[in-house]
Length: 375
Image 1 (cartoon, one colour):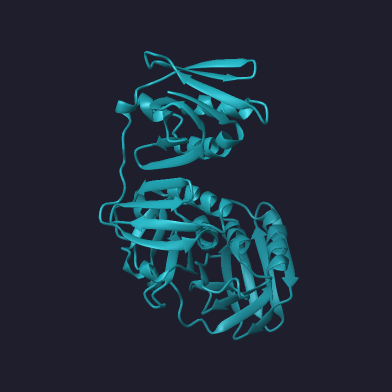
Image 2 (cartoon, one colour; image 1 turned 90 degrees about the vertical axis):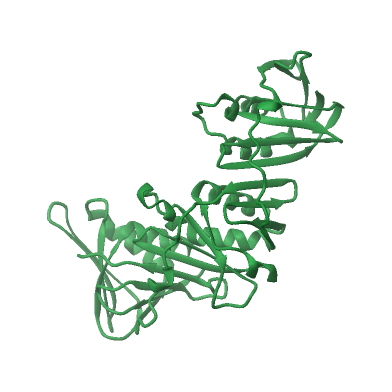
C-alpha cells in the first residue's frame, strides 16, 4: 500500500475516529485504525466492538492495499504536521511497518494485518428512514443531558429512539431519563420512520451521532435500524452501533397530564437567579425552594451551616400557591436546552412532577419533566 494525501483531508476524520477507540485495550488491534486504499479513496475505520465508524476521504493511490496502525499516534502525527502539507504513507514489503513522510519529517509506525480486524457488520433486515442532520442535532441536544449514568439501570444509559405513537407517521421521538428528570423531543423524518423498531442507543453512540449531526446540519442522514444494531450514514461518514438490550420503561406514565397551576417567566432571569441563590446551598442536591403565588416566584435556600439566600423574580402565575423544591443543577441543565426566551412551568402540587416547556415555535415538541425534592 502506498498513498499520498492532503493533511487537511485527515484531520477531521481522525479526530472523530480517535474518540471511538478506547485508550485502554486488552486486544491490541482495537487500539488501531484500519486503512483501506483503493479507487482514489482512503477508507479509515475504528471500532471498540460495541461501535464502529468509517470515514472515506480522497487520496492519490499509488498502490492499493489495507493495514491497521495505532490510532492515537497517527492522529497526533497528523495534527502536528504543518498546514497545507501532503503526507506520503507507504507500507513496508513485509507489512509490519508503515512509513509516513511529510516535508522533512519521517515517522515509522508498527502495523498489524487487516485479517485480524473485527468486522461488526451492519444491521440485518433493518428498517430504513431518512432524516436531516439538523433534526437529529435538535433532538439529541434536547434530551441527552438526562441520560442516566447509573450502570445498574443499564437500560437508561442511552436515548430511547422510536416513532412517536400519538403523532403522524413521520415523527421520530427521542427520550432520556435518569429517574429524576425526563426529556422528550419529537422531530420530523420521512414517512419510513413509522416502520422502525423501538431501540435504545447507547450514550457513547449518542455523543458521536450528536457531533456528526451538529457538524452537518444541512445533510441527509440515512438510518438503518434493526433490533440489535443501528447504522447512520451521512455523506462520507458511516457509524454503526450495537443497541442496548433491554426494555425501556413506559415514560408516558411519568409525563403529567393535568398540571393546572402555571407560571411563565423569562428563561435567562430564572437561570441567573438560580445560580445566585444556589451559592449558599450545600450537598450534591443543592435543593432550592420555588414558591409560586400571585405575587410571582420566590427562590430560597436555607442552610444550617452556610446561611440563607432569597430572590424574587417576575413570573406570570395562574393557580393556587405552590411551594416545591428542585435540584439546582438539574434546573440549570434543563434551562440550558430550552430553545426559547420564555419558559412555562406547569404544576399540580409540591410533591408531583413539574412539566417544563419553552414558549416558541422552535421549542415545539420538546417536553421536559422534573421531579420535586423535599426542602
